[in-house]
Length: 97
Image 1: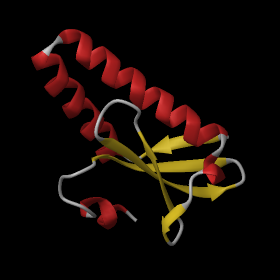
Image 2 (image 1 turned 45 degrees about the vertical axis):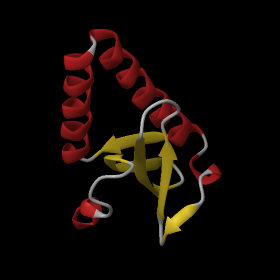
Image 3 (image 1 turned 90 degrees about the vertical axis):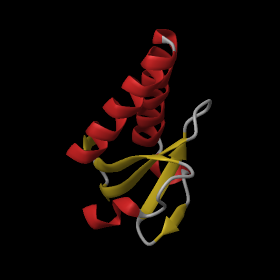
Image 4 (image 1 turned 180 degrees about the vertical axis):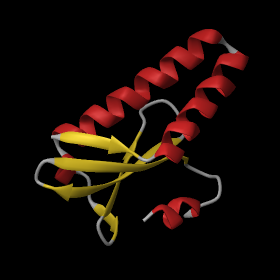
């Protein structure tokens, strides 16, 4: 399955990487790897993740407090709408729908 990423989600991920790199360069690398792994899990088995709202699913990163919010567009593609911090501004990304 292919994926597309909303431009704002790309910015969110880049901001988070910069934040973690400012604390420790290795943290930035690990965060980025977690995001890539989460994208891969969503891409390979999108329906494994339950809908938390109509048509929307989320994948939790393993070691960081972030969710990958996505939707299944069709049998061949998912769209990643947000790389969202688990406890900041819930639902801010809904305007991207």
